[in-house]
Length: 473
Image (cartoon, rainbow, N blue to C red; front, side, top):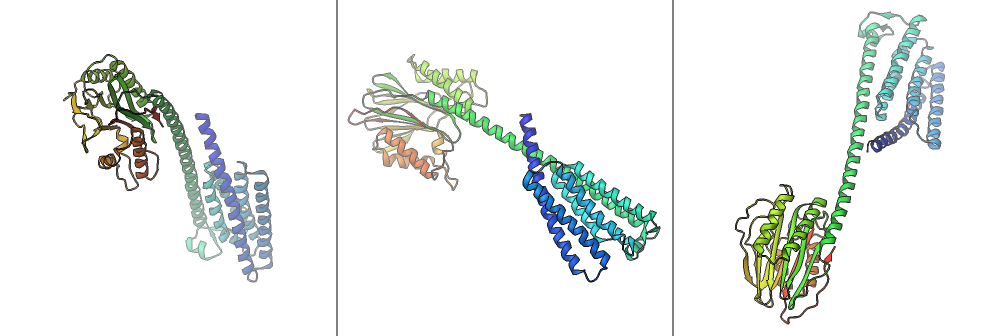
C-alpha cells in the first residue's frame, strides 16, 4: 500500500504541476499581450530607446512562450520545467529592468511598475506544491535585485541616501530605507508563498491518501460482501419440505449491505414443519458467519425433537459463548402442526409475524429479548395459537418494514397488513414475489437498504399444493 500511495501521490502532484504549467504559460501569453497593448498605447509618450527595449523584451517573451507551448504539446510535462520556466520568467523581468537603466534616469529601473510582475510569478509557484521552487524563484529574485542595485551603484548611476520614504517615492533618489523596505516585503512574500506551497502539498497528499484509503476500504467491503453473499446463498434451503395441506415458500432478498438474515423450513414429521426466521445484527462476513452458526445449530437441535423453549435456550447459551457482546440475534421459531391445527412459537426480539385467519390479521407479539444478550431470557414461554385451514402466516426480517422511500418514510407494518389483507388469496410464492415488488416500488425501484428474509406458510383449503424450490437473490 505504501508504494501504491507514493506512486499515486507523485502522479497526482505531477498532474497538478502539468496543469499549473499550462495555466502559467497561458497567463504568460495573456500578460505579454496586455503589456504589448500598453506599450502600443504609450508608444508616442516614451523615447525611441524605451520603445526598442520594450518591444525587444516582448519579442523574446513571445518566442519563449511559444517554445514552452510547443514543448508541452510535443513532449509533455517534465518536473524540471517548473524550475526552468519560473526562473526564466523572472530573468525576463530583470532583463527589461536592466534595459531601463540605459534611459536618462537609471533609478527608474528600481521603481518601475514592471517589478510588480515578479510577485505574480513567485505567487504562481504555490500551484506547483513545491516549497523549494518558491525559494529558488524567490532567492533568484532577491539576488538579481541586489545585483541590479549594486551594479547601478558601482557605475555611479544612482546614489543611495538616508532620506525618508518621501524622497524614495516622489523623487529620483534611491534611499536605504526605501530599498530595505522593498526587500523586506519581497522576502516576506516569498516566505508566505513558500508556506502556502508546502501547505498545498500536504493537503494534496492528504487528499490522495484519504482517497486511496477509502478505495481500499470499499474494495475490502465489496470483497467481504461477496463472501457474505456466498455464505448466505449456501445456507438458504435449496428446497422446501412437503407437508400435506401446506403451501410453503421462503426467500432472502439481498440488499445493499449483505447481512445475517436467515430463513428456513424444516420438516419434523409428515404433519409438522418448523419455521425459522432470524436476523444477525451487523452485516458483512461476521454476520454471515454467525448466521451459518445459527443455522447449523438449529438443524442439529431440531433433529432431537426438543421443545421450542429448550431449543431457544440452548441456542442462546451457544451464542453467548461464541459471539461478541456487541452482536445479537433476533430469532423467531414456530412449529405448525396440521393435525392439531395449531402453531406454537417463541419470539426472541424478532419483528412480530402476522397470521391471517377468519378474515382478520393478528400479530405474534409475545416473546422475549434477542439471543446472545443475556444468559437468562425473561418471559421465555412457548405461545400457542390456532392455525386452521385457510390460515396464512407471514414471518419476515426488519429489512422489509424499514425500507425507506424518497420522503424518508418507512414501509412499516401498516402497509404490510394492508397488502396482506388484499393479497391473502395468492399462493405462497406469488405472495412473496408480489410483496417484494410492492416494497421496491415503494422505494422507487432502488436497491433494498437491507436484506429481507421472508417466509410464508398457507394452510390450504383443498389440502394440496405444488411446492417450489427455495430462492435467494
